[in-house]
Amino acid sequence: MDFSSDIAFTPTIKAIQTAKGSRQSYARMEQSGSWETRITSDLKAFIEAQTSIFMATTNAQGQPYIQHRGGPEGFLHVLDEETIGFADFAGNRQFITMGNLQENPHSHLFLMDYQHRQRIKIWGEAVVIEDDPELLTKLMPINYKARPEQVILFKVKAWDANCPQHIPQRFEAKDVQRILAERDQRIEALEDEVKRLQKLLKDA
Image 1 (cartoon, rainbow, N blue to C red):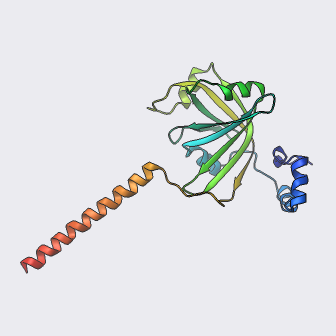
Image 2: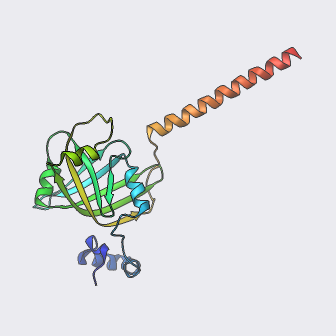
Image 3: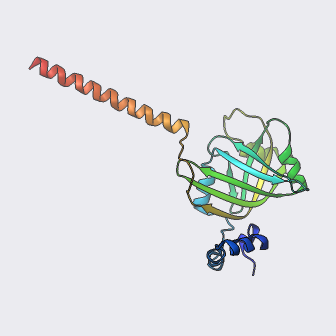
């Protein structure tokens, strides 16, 4: 019987799991339904909240490559229950990801939420779309200062959520600035209240 997690758990990997003592627990996971193969509403919300992701590809010789992709919240779009799309911005023009996908469509997305210490791994296949200006406009973030060159569509085959172990907790700069601004406003209000009470005592 085939399981969705077989996309990652090859016979070699399953043999290692057996030798290391983890195969039994993963076998139970497989029997209970294995990994999700469709984008759920929770995953959609997680994907579209990301501002920074990593995309892995390999060329025809199996040489791996990982490239960072980033943008404002919402730059990743869930187009349907199996498709993620985003505008691919102009960069250093090495075109390694683009070339790898022409040779080998298999790809992987690694999404990390540092604030909530959660990571999502997504296996699938990706394709570069160069001749669809309407789709490119649809996926381009509004008022974002970047030059879009093409669209990347990612078809989800399976995904898994990892535990938070060893993920350092970090916060977006805009969130820290908001919290500090709220703190400063509270301090200012308290200082004004102290001054008011001091004046009342002085005048009493």
